[in-house]
Length: 119
Image (cartoon, rainbow, N blue to C red; front, side, top):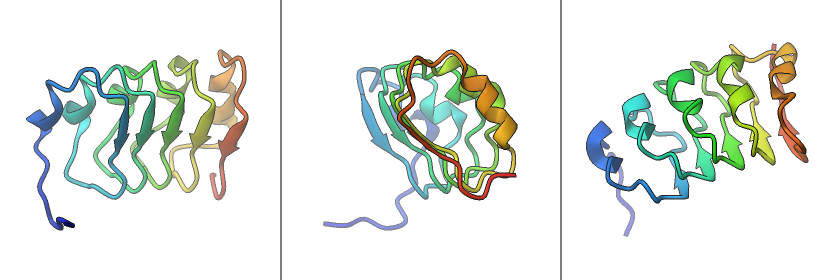
């Protein structure tokens, strides 16, 4: 069964504190409040989201995989705190530049970094 036009409220995920994998791709109804309690996440897709900002991303320090393609609210400010990343997709973000990669200096290894069409 496929569900379309399902509205996700910010309080929908508050009790899922042990959740490790979440695909919120192309879901413009979620905000920072949706992610604030999900600090155990290791894999997160936020591609094509418009309401997620650095505020929530910087709290998700357990992330190993993060997809932020076309998420124009994210800046380099939150990236430096994500020291466990092994996969990072930053393509087509208006607020991410090639200079933003300097924020990733705390990483031990980042085998996959995708930055197509960044400023």
